[in-house]
Amino acid sequence: MNAPSRLRILGVDPGSVTTGVAVIELTRREPTCLHLESLRLSGKAGFPERLGEVFTRISGLIETFQPTEFAIEQVFMFRSPESSLKLGQARGAAIAAAVVRGLPVAEYMPAEVKQSVVGTGRADKAQVQHMVKRLLKLTDDPPADGADAAAIALCHAFRRTSLMGVAGSGQMSEQQRENMRLLAQSRFRRRSK
Image (cartoon, rainbow, N blue to C red):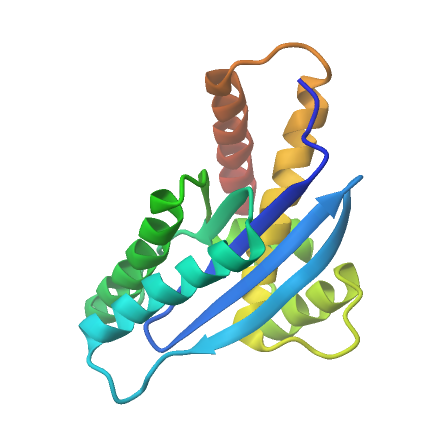
């Protein structure tokens, strides 16, 4: 199975105050940034309203940019269970927007994203911003949350194209592709410990 000629990915770094979003397109393994920003959610609105805003704004980006795939960061535990719960709910609102539009959803751990883009799973925000700027050939420094979203989209693009390269032109079922992705993630997690 050949990789699609156009792979357009919406990457999301979820949050209940600021949500990073980026749309990248991969053509012949060369990433191009179509959109990148940190969405500031209404500070005066209550938490349920902000979740609705995440859903609505992600839905709007899907409508505008017509991505073919969706990538988002997996939840990690904060010191505060309340913060983790809020992050999980914001993440759920973003995923729901993608699923309603029929987009396949890929999830990546923060360390996996950093490893893929920077080369180390312990990179800081400044390193991620720097590499996103270089990889996407941006003229200005990207906002931190937008850079994280772009890194998630790039991670997905790199993983997706490398798995497709391994698959070659032979026929590979969706289950086989998913098994390869899970194998790659488990190897990464073992190396990161």
